[in-house]
Amino acid sequence: MSENQISTTELTSQYIAQVTSDLERNSKEQERIATDISALQEQLLALQHDHTVLVNMHQALGGTSPVAAATPAAPSVPSQSSARTKQSKAAKPKKATATGAKKAEARKPGTGKTAAKAPRTTDRPSLVDLIRGHLEAQNEPRSAAEITTALTAAHPERTIKTTVVRTTLENLVARSSAQRNKQGSSVFYTATAEATAEAEPAAAAG
Image 1 (cartoon, rainbow, N blue to C red):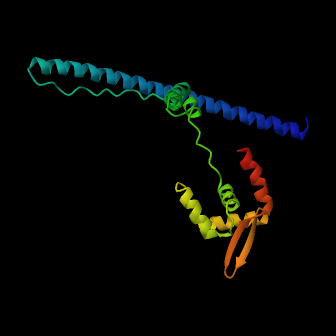
Image 2 (cartoon, rainbow, N blue to C red; image 1 turned 135 degrees about the horizontal axis):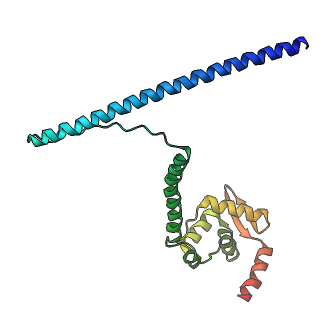
């Protein structure tokens, strides 16, 4: 046999001896604990018997109810299966709550078909259309302030600001739908001939 084989055999023998010794020690420890448990159980039974006898004697002598013996219960470690069962039971109410919330949302008024049946708001002309129509109806140039005053009086339900009107007029000028005329420090606007020509057939058709 080679030296490696000899060393491996010796190491295996040592392991076997160690494991054998551990097994013997484990078995002896189990026997000792079992003997202690048996002795403790016998002591507990004797104490319980004595307690019963003492209680009967106490009641026979007319004494008040004695304090009941507090018999210690053996501690129980919950198994993994019981722990999973508790976790699943604890999780079920959450699912039920989520389902109930979905049903409650489904029953809320004002959703679904009810919302679909809501009447649509009446379409109203845009500010661009109002400004362009106002310019086309005028024979003289108008400033942004004058147009704002006229449109506010004609449409009191709308909030019309001069700055917005001026920006809209400049956009119309950029699209050749209006002309800008500057007189001193004031700026006036008129509808272009093309815009007026387009508006006339539309008015006749209307």
